[in-house]
Amino acid sequence: MGRSFEVRKASMAKTAGAKIKVYSKYGKEIYVCAKNGGADPDMNLSLRHLITKAKKDQVPAHVIEKALDKASGGGGEDYVPARYEGFGPGGTSVIVDCLTDNGNRTYQDVRQCFVKTGAKIGVEGSVSHMFAHQAVFQFKGDDEEAILEALMMADCDVTDIELEDGVVTVYAPNTEFFKVKTALNAEFPELTLDVEEITFVPQNYVTVPEEDQEKFQKFLDMLDDCDDVQQVYHNAEQ
Image 1 (spheres, rainbow, N blue to C red):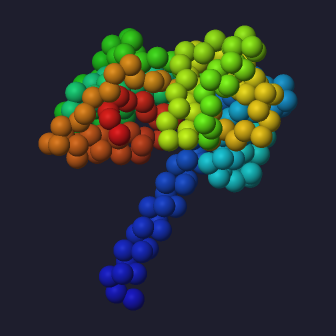
Image 2 (image 1 turned 60 degrees about the vertical axis):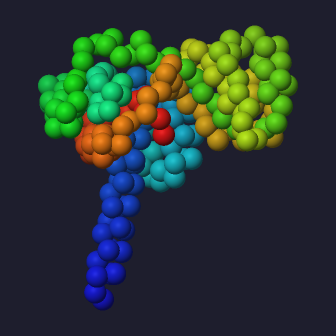
């Protein structure tokens, strides 16, 4: 079989490993959301959105059902959110969101990602003021004025709306997420939302110097390998 088989096998293993991480992160997030707000998606809008997002990312139904069953059972782990901020390689600003059942372990794991790549973990608020906590929607379109008018008529608070290369991006305060989504679905029922999420949007982006790019990628890979890390936000130019 030779070298080509070994390369292919390693690639398949890496892909499988990445999928398992995605499934695990969604499973944990769905469990926490269902445990805190109820396991019925019709009554828990956050859970409904999360399940829809998981399905878009091809998370198997049995992973979703297992998380819901676990939450309905009333037992299981007691996860709490944890957020860490700091300065990554190349002058980047970074926010790391986690779900943890052991805060000390998670802090040490995240801190090591910073330390081992020459980065610096900061205190709460050290970089979050450089980001806007936004609801972001993205879809194919060519008339941002019609979209904006419809959202204004629905009394939605819109931060910004952009049209680029046939793609419309709507930004709104994070608290307006469900209101904007409902308005878009009602006014444009044929619309397919390619992106619908609450995220941290950098107010300014930085270009990572060439000499720091490998270190920055290592930093992201290390965070991705941390079981408790759910999301990583940064202001590096993509």
